[in-house]
Length: 491
Image (cartoon, rainbow, N blue to C red):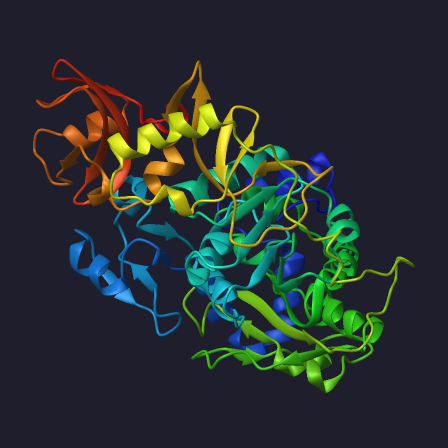
């Protein structure tokens, strides 16, 4: 949620003083008008929704993680990789989280990443992606094929997004920090799936965001709806003919859900809502909750209510773009087949000396990884393996162009953290496998950035926990210098 309308300082103070879970009076009144006798059970569920955990299937099957985890996990009916976390458990502090085995995510948010059909080798764009819950889900479903472009207009949030993709071992992601209109101008009509998890009034997040409660007002809701419509104008043009647009919010306001969807369909008759997979407890959207009433096809969108479905609540719509010409609000057409518009990104090819330094590292440290198949480009001093398919990236603000393998300095190759996080530790020539339940606490020492003691040959070693990668160390004389990134180290 972001960019909402502002209350006065006095109004914000009044809401804050009403209590940690006190909801805006106008919101309560609105929901009573919509839900009638269900209002109180809805408000009770909204105040304390359950916590969710989504298994990262790039690294581990759901049932194996459930069997390994030292905390209780209750399977969700949908999606199959989703679980509820028992109250009082803290999976975010466990080493398995640092190893990227799961993402802590609201159960309703998991639905958004699960519903679109992803064809083999799909081109997928998450237009407002930070902090990365839905992007990491989409990447896991792509399973290394195709390409995921994850974008957030705010560079700091895009860096957080890149970090979560790295932790989850994603190899085929491009991370950008661009305005949607810039992406539309560059990539119009290229993506099979475009996800718009829109900035909204965040009503389902009231239980954990005092700012959301303080800043809520009917005027702020209308302001969000206007901005969502602007965002969708660009998003529609990024979808190829026959492709899919997914629109979602974490709010209950009809103006931001059915109202925005109705306006989108009126503007773009080439878009048709399609039915999502069967999701237990989901309810159809309500065309009668906006004025004038939305078309009946809006009922194919779904509402996830916190008193009916596990989670804090979401709205999700899936729309397929017909093969006909795209309505052009911006007055500019795009050729989706243009090789000039959608060629591989301009990037320097490494010199033979650089490639030799990288090859020497792989042969010595990761002999089990066939690096000859990687399409390696050099961006500055970084070597990155490009995704199987990649959009043109010239003149765009790009944070990551694929899988960051490492950095070349003074003729030497130094491995990146993302290289460790996206490989099976069994590929490494030297490895230190720590136990998550080690009473000595070696895992915690590593995650705090401390050195380890380990006998063996000098050189790079892969550090893992219970067989899953954590990062790099470099051994000299039985002492392993810690190369876990400083930004990630625990205090």
